[in-house]
Length: 383
Image (cartoon, rainbow, N blue to C red):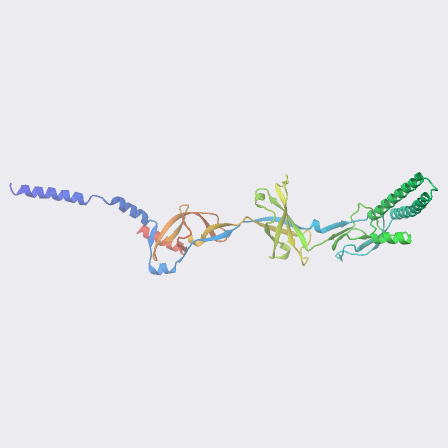
C-alpha cells in the first residue's frame, strides 16, 4: 500500500505535465505564419536568376481619340472672286492650277455699266475744272470790286458740288474694279476704256474657275476661287462626350488614308461653341502645314486627339498575375524570397498597367517571370 501511492501520484503529475506541454500556446503565431506563407515563396537559385527585378516607373500616358475628318481649304487664305459689273467675258488669262499674284488679271470683261460710269466721271471732272476757273475769276473780280460777295459764294458752292460729284464718280469706278493707275489714265487722256480686267485679290492657286469666254456674268456670280494651299484645315466632328478634352492650341495627329501610314502634326484652332442637335457632335478645326500641296481639299482624314498627358506609375503587363478576380505583383524580399501583394490596376496602355494602389515606386518587384513564380508558389501551397 505504501508503494502504490507514490506511483499513482507520479502518474498524476506526469499527466499534468503532459497536458501543459501539449497546450497550443503559440497557435495564433503559427496560424499567422501559415497565412503569410500563402503569399510568400522562396525559390531555387536557378529560378531566381531567371527573374528580372526592377522598380515601377513614371511615364506620361495619353489616350487617343480618333475622329473621322476631311480636308478643307483655309477660309482665311482663300478668296472668291467675281465681277463688279454685269457684262460679257471677253478674254480668259488663267486656267485651273495656275499660281497668281495679288492684282494679276484673271479675265477681261466688257460692260455698258462701266462705260456709263466712266462718262459720269469725265463729266464730273470737266465740271470741276470749269467751276474752279469760274471761282478763281470771281475772286479777282471781287478784289476789283466788280461783283458782290454773294456771287463769289455762289460760285464757290458750285465748285464744292462739282468736287463732290467727282468724288462720287471716282468711288463708283473703284467699286467697279478700276485701279488708281487706270483712273489717272482716264483723267489724263479722257479716253473711255472699253473693257475691265477682273483681278486676283490675293496670292495663291486657282482652285476653281466657273466661267468661259462669251459668258454673261453678274456681280453675284462666283467666277474664280484663289487659295493659298500651304496651310489647310482638317475639319472633324468630335462626339460631345469627349469634347471637354479638346482645347485650342492642342496638338493632334492627322492621318490621311490616301497617303498611307504618313502622320502629320496639326494644331486645333477652333472648337465650336454649339452642339449639332442631329449628330450630337462638336465641330473642330485643325490647322495643318501643306508645303508640298499633297493634301487636297475634300480628302478623307482621321484626327487623333490625345487627352492631356498625366504621369502614372506603371509596371509591365508581365509583372501582373491574377487570381480570383484580384491582381497581384511580387515584391523581392531577397535574392530568392518574394512576397505576393494585391494591387489595384488601371486599363492597359501600350503593354503597361497603371498602378493605382498597392505598392510604391521605390519597391523592387518582379518585372518578368511573375507567372512562373506564381506557379511555384501554388505548387508549394499544395505540398
